[in-house]
Length: 388
Image (tube, rainbow, N blue to C red; front, side, top):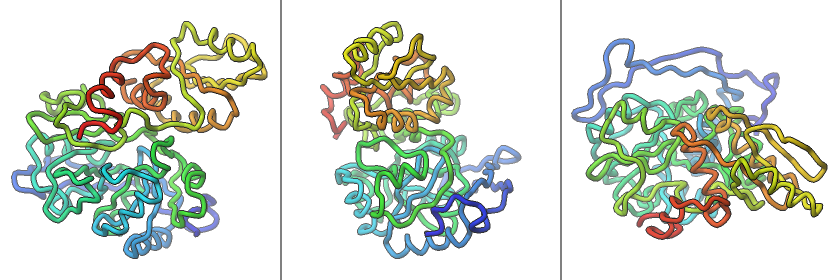
């Protein structure tokens, strides 16, 4: 299919332009921001043609799956109004049916199709962070199918900030249900070739948007219950959210809805992942290589020594760059034929929280050298599948 071709000479690409539009009032009590602050802009950087977009739209309407880029990771999309099409996502990924999927829309004008009620806090967050890497969990509208929500009375929804996702959603004219475009529990895809590696010929329709700019899944905030809660950390941090809604709390409680990407083991390469304190990294590496065992390393600095049994990636000390390349680096190290992937323990601080969350889940508690009490407590309280 032409839409997978990254060669600009093969077809005309989307115009390189900036466009803006206001978010209007779409639900009772919704107040759109006025003046310059009400505009959200996207830069068109697409590698696909308008014909590719139209072909993808026709595929979605026919009940087929389409992989498409967002600013976070690539999504595996289906018509959210077609339950059988959404079930194809679960079958292809091997995803448990109790796991909800996120509905993507191009604009809040479609919220009333999916959400029964938006709390004042939810409206403020949407106004501040949409389009962008924020997913809101709210009470579902009556017509939303159980296959979307995992049988819960809530729905997860977001407005992505990627030009190709926006083009696709706008042309489609409705919601697209889309988890990450990878086998369940595997490392998320941030390049179109990652999607091809996961599904091969099983997936016909892919839109190539280049590398994802954020590289980690969206922050998920539940806006049901006594107070808004972060259920999955992402690039939008707690302090950024609290600047808009001060009552937001961090972490789920036993009554929180199930949301994607929160099982104790997730985002995992085939090769075992262990987290190692920085001061012990070279020591642990040497223990493997001294026995002629290959080891792969994801660190924040160059190695002090090198040898033929070691593959070392210096991911740097800037959290936004580390996050953008995390899944690319894990996939690269997974192919290094090492016995193990050693990840240097990350610094404290909220800018590292989402990255730390993904690495902890990739490793699982038993593979973290400095035993992690948060993950252990989560499993003890809720089990591997999270809160019911």
